[in-house]
Amino acid sequence: MRHIRIFDTTLRDGEQSPGVALSLQQKLEIAHALARLNVDIIEAGFPVNGASEFECVSRIAQEVQGPVICALARTHKLDIERAAAALEPAEKRRIHVFTSASRVHLEYMLKKTPEQIIELTDEMVRYARTFTDDVEFSAQDVMRADFDFVLRLYDTAIAAGATTINIPDTTGYGTPLEYGALIKRIHDEVVRGRDVHISAHCHDDLGMATANSLAAVENGATQIECTINGIGERAGNTALEEVVMALYVRRDHYQAETQINTREIYRISRMIERYTGMVVQPNKAIVGDNAFAHESGIHQDGVIKNKETYEIMNAELVGREAAVLVLGKHSGRAAVKKALHDLGYKLDESQMQTVFQRFREIVDRKGPISTEELRALVESETAPTAHLFAIEQLQFFSGYGMLPTATVRLKTPKGEVTTTAIGDGPVDAVYKALAEAIEIQPELELYRVEAVTGTTEALGEVTVKLKLGEVLATGHGISPDIIEASARAYLDAANKLVAGQAAKHPPSLDEVQAKGIVR
Image: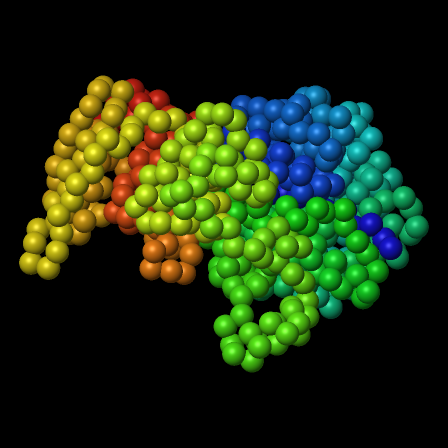
């Protein structure tokens, strides 16, 4: 079978999703998770785009072993030089050089003629080859470009030394039939048997990114560019989990395979959901909550007799344990530690102590917790956040005919602070009291409440997005009590805002105060 390389661009194209701002530590954790997933290539970032982006690519190149580490560069010498410098520590490195192909891009974005683009491509691909033997070349918006120009452009890139040519459907315009035909023409008329990989990079504006990528495989592509959960600009990119499992389940049809460790898929999907704040829809293929759920009586009867009646793959294959793990107030530290180990988590002593303490607090209040609740708990408590503010006490009064009132006592860098506020409801009152206690006034961009499982005793999981000036941060909180979970989520985001973890160039607390965004 042909080997299809998986090129993951979650940290580059995926992070361009509106409202997403990952910290350096989060990016490193994601990169290590991608290595465990066994992707072929990690596109770590765009080094010329600032010092923090350069540092991120460099740290990943230094610390992450296994996959090829790739950095993006325009057809500019400075871009290529910065990419090469950031990739220097990597054992295996790739420079990804890109330009544009469509008339509208050339005329309005690049303001260059086709001949100028051809000349620049030749020069810059050759320049990139002076730093590494692994060079990828892309031309944006190929689906809307003149094919004769596309042929010349990619032929020039190959002659200059490109070892992978990427065919981006940048606007998600193509259909599987059209995109597959384009890949075949490039395979037959441009590559012509030369030792060059063809890569598919599809966007999901019309909901066809996965189908288009698979059509590319059918027509000669040997690499797919994708993101975890399909995140990315606008409607997102091809979803890694979808193309990987399609190639696995239908290998009889595609006669192709990947090297992905499928049992890591669900774990990294949850990590991306938590760190980005972008919720996975319940009916999302492979990783959605309902992907392996059966409610219909006919379906349930069939699955009980034989899973293959209604399942083409099982949950364990993508890392979703079928067995229910229940831990309660009588469970000791050793039992919790083993359960976490079985789920694939490796915590240091400090993290274990934090998780176990919160575990005991929760099960004493609500009773046993499930596997999914344990996952949510450990991922919430081990997420890297500077704890400048911490809840000491929280009290609120609300009800029909009553004025919602909240009192909070916080530990802050200035010492212990107690504040009281009234609001339109208990959450509003708590948030007003918290804002007064921490002395900043962020805007609430998003507030979302979910039950980790589908029972009335389930843990409540709250996600908030706070904005302070141009800085955006996502916070999470988990508790049997929704109001407490709301307060924890707010403080989690506030800690990130003040500590500067949510932006590439965050303001300090003194700078925030100087700008007058404080009370």
